[in-house]
Length: 268
Length: 271
Image 1 (cartoon, each protein chain N blue to C red):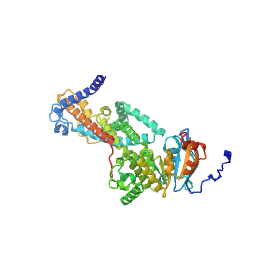
Image 2 (cartoon, chains in turn green, brown; image 1 turned 45 degrees about the vertical axis):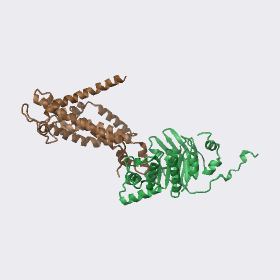
Image 3 (cartoon, rainbow over the protein chains, first blue to last red; image 1 turned 60 degrees about the vertical axis):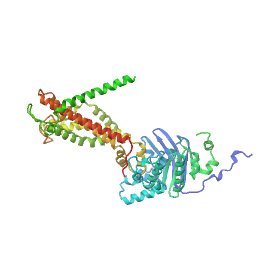
Image 4 (cartoon, rainbow over the protein chains, first blue to last red; image 1 turned 120 degrees about the vertical axis):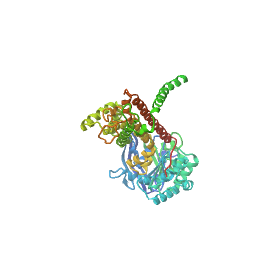
């Protein structure tokens, strides 16, 4: 038996990829409570990257830093860099509104606008920003709803309230709404945690279709989900990135003991 | 225990019913179309009405609404959406104090800055005094109804690349508008029934208001003025005016209930 330190790990470097997002020493706090303690992570383009970890590990805060939503919480602050296509989104010259148009988000709980119809919900990102043209809106609505695989289910009732749909349909409506503003990146914060298994399967299938056009980051505490959909997975623990790797390798052969203990269910 | 609670409910409700019953019984004989459309007559001269007081009230409450609603809604939006600013905290606190202020002192304030300056009691001064009464109510109800709009909706909008101010104007107010309407109606009801702010500002006039810069009658003032008079026909007219005012209040309160009912019974789609 050879000693443990002789195990060859030199081949564990990731195959090269083109990164869409890169964070450098990204720190985030609520007041004096630092919840992200310096994250260095490269997120590959047109892939699904899972951000996984136990509750309170900072995974949601991490993605909320990527579209500058974190800073909207009173008392919340961010340090470090987050590069989108090589440019720091926290640079003083950058308008957070532009970043949010390029980095869409789907939330944990489906949150369609309750006073708006299905149609108005899908195109809300356009109409709220002053787009008026009826034809443009109709085309965008159909395109986005088709992309979210919701078109066939709602095409005859676009005037109904968005809140009248089932939970899974509402979540796909929210995905369609995010896609309508044509982002490059889609952040999904535990998008299935409020859904039943059938609706979850639909969303996961949808994600694998969408990754050809979008860079997707999904937050999940569900390891099965990460292993099912994600090409890459980052394991977060107590505000730090413990390990980042191709999903299959991370699950089958983790480098870090902490990761191994988490995926074998020894804590979490 | 249940008995005690029922007793408490009875103690709370019975006086209200007695008052309404009394107002209806005493005011109904005065009610007629002529009563609402004629101007007052001297004591003992039949055919008098309260048209000048109704129009004075409508004029002053209307003008007060025009002043108080934009300012109050604006302040309420600020309290709700920018709570982290020190100005917001200070003015929100001031707003609370203002809401509790004795209304007669608001009248004195307006007397000092408007009535003395213009050397005349006037409908304008009355409207400004009523606006100050309405302002904190509108601001507070606006703040409360916007605060209950879930953060998730604000974030949904912001995450779509909608700027904060557009999110507030279109999404937050769009979702909270039923509550906003409720606040405006409640403040109108309150202003329409106020007497004290008008004592030192609009004073009273038996004539149809023709100018904002002349004294003007109002329903509450007429009730006070006629009710104290020794003339039986004037006192009957005071009951009639009281009935009109109470009916108006009940109508507004019912409307508010419908508003709130709609807010909580679900959502209406607009295509």
